[in-house]
Length: 270
Image (cartoon, rainbow, N blue to C red; front, side, top):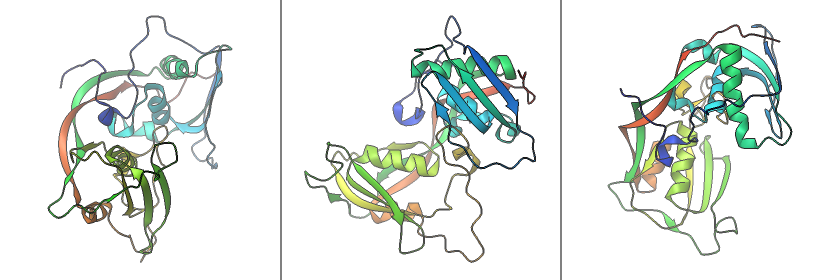
């Protein structure tokens, strides 16, 4: 493994380029409180901007993901980062640009949790989207297909087989790989060579996920509970892709990752 600058192809990073600023940006005032382990709460949507970050009942893993713009599949650290929960409410100076809030969160995590991180290059398991053995079964989209503004339209619902179904209208391969990355929690790389726009359905099992490495970070889905006994899993997303005349092939590729070297479970509170 070697240290590297934080530069990565967009389809692998799914995040933002970051670097430590010369002068660390910080919030004007911040409240950090640990949530009692046995306290039961309903999920609360995070409040981010303007000039404010309010995260309730969140893990330190979630906060680090937000602060550094990283997805869980490209983060490495101790298990407790996904378990202990906190309330963090922070006020930024008036007029603070929204893009500065994650930088301020980095400063806060370093000060209150003694969080120390670094970046390096590691080989990560990705999924390559490639042509399958059979005939391509993607339907070319009509010029008017899509969201009406030249982009793709993506809708979600239940499938007849008991799983989930996504309908893509006027979408290219970029739409498909972004959708698959979100569903499977793995970077998906397009090697189909297809440049058109298509209309097609995509079925998948609600319980088919990549596990803990796919969830828990900022703007990521929460882990799904185990299916009830006797529940039908629905069509595998890999089978659904094959029905389109494509295939998903696992492959290891180098990418930049975030390694959490140190963090204190008990924060410096107010």
